Length: 387
Image 1 (cartoon, one colour):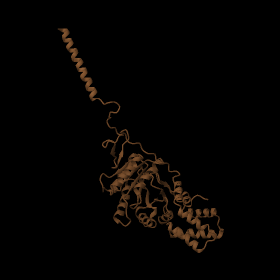
Image 2 (cartoon, rainbow, N blue to C red):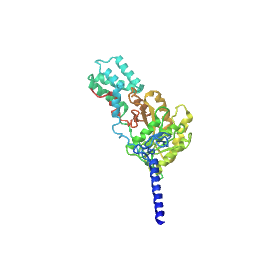
Image 3 (spheres, rainbow, N blue to C red):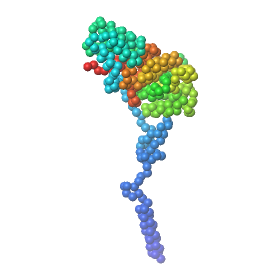
């Protein structure tokens, strides 16, 4: 009886094993071609893409960790790129002047042509008169005709009018208030719509990071949600935080104040505050800019007020410069869209108008195409390489 029972249990055990084996064969993935669960690097609409804080959607890396930040290109030597770009566009200002000045004898018509070239390049009437008078005197006295000598003479005249002695450095050092509290260097960035102001703020953050400074961004353009999103994206790429309003249309002055306070608490070197693009004929908006200045200075003194101008706007930019100079107390100019244009004379005109230097120039659309302005490099770019 015992042997029969044992035999029965043995058959039951074998049956269980057979059933288990069949289930494994039926349910297990079939070979190497079996489909695996989706991972973050595969194109699953729920996992492969996710919005960043700024609202844009980007593909996530393979791991769930935060993406690594970019390392901006060094700022040294950036302006040398302008020489190549102006050369590709024909460097019209420098080449036109050199062509006329190299003629065997210069008539009144030739001098009128030189004056017209400078005016069309937006040098401005006053500086143009000074350049032409100086060149006429040198040509008459020295009888210059050799192309190399003409180039050297013109280079000297342009460099003098641009004024290489102006201080073009940016204030990036933390300062100590009267009460002994150390605060960041605060830079307010202003300008009208369409000049590339928010993009310039993002590129300036890259310049400062490349030079070793820590930065906080303040998105005080609260009337355009895309501006805060854009600025936040620029900052995230180089590991820079952005302080922004929780709602569209929030108080710009409050955002600016919070950004400066965040910078002070974090021990940041520089706080960059972006502002809404303002038309110079909108008195209410200009009043608001004055409010932002007043609120910021309760927390920290303003180190810089940078006015962003489009180099292609010509003399219309002078109107903008005058109004912002009166309201915002501009300390420096950022010229955008300077590459490949005959409007290089705007550098001279805007400096004369405001009595403040051009400190940075935009050379193109790349993220590191913002360069500290160097007068000698700029003039050499306008004139092209000597023959």
